[in-house]
Length: 102
Image 1: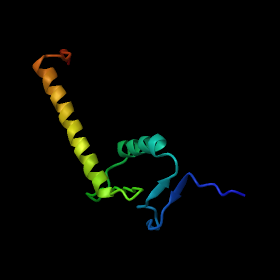
Image 2: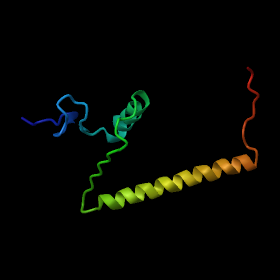
Image 3: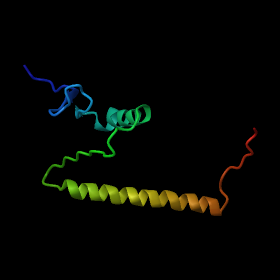
Image 4: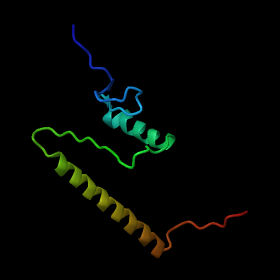
């Protein structure tokens, strides 16, 4: 008989009252994973600690630090591109105008 991997698992180290826990979703990182992350941030208050934990797991001897630094650099480049496009649209007045009625 073949054992099936559970879709969701609570990893060791969870608080007894489950106020803090690491959950592992199997084969769902690009499907439900991102949607669930967005809904959690949308519907729940921010955590009481001013800290975020990111777990990066690499294979084939690749560095998680290199992956993190590349992702941060790519995010910075994306933000700059969006800002440049926004400022260009303002300069060229390529935006919709409307009067707000009170």
